[in-house]
Figure 1 (cartoon, rainbow, N blue to C red):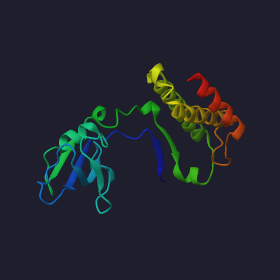
Figure 2: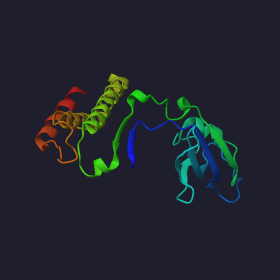
Figure 3: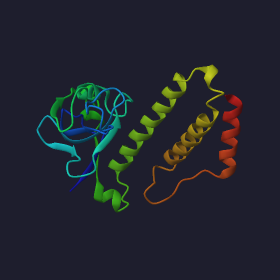
Length: 198
């Protein structure tokens, strides 16, 4: 039985195969700031199990220095050439974060696909809703007051999504069997209030 577990386990090791900068033919193919990189990888956990891989699939593509991948991984790739292979080990805090078993929530994928809203599903949804609200609050607190006028469209969308999340929570997270939405009039009211407050 396949289970969905949140948050994701932290990565311990990443085996990189054939990083290949996508550069003009007359330039040396070395990963450096601004290089467009295409690579295959295998992500392994401390126990040796494979958490993710793209070997035999489409390569991961990113631009070096644009923080499109983990910053500590990006640092490890500088200087690699086409067809180089490198094993990189990252501490959890340098990758996806330390796993807190107390935060782990498991709900079988088959249960979700069947639309069964169990107690475990409810706990998972509550955890995610609380986390989302925390991120909304942190993002708003980090936005300087003088910048809020310029950010009105984003603030309006955040206020609408937050109101939608509140509705979903009020309805008991019955998202597998029913659609929760806000009326156009309510969205307009939220947009106007947010516009004026910014």
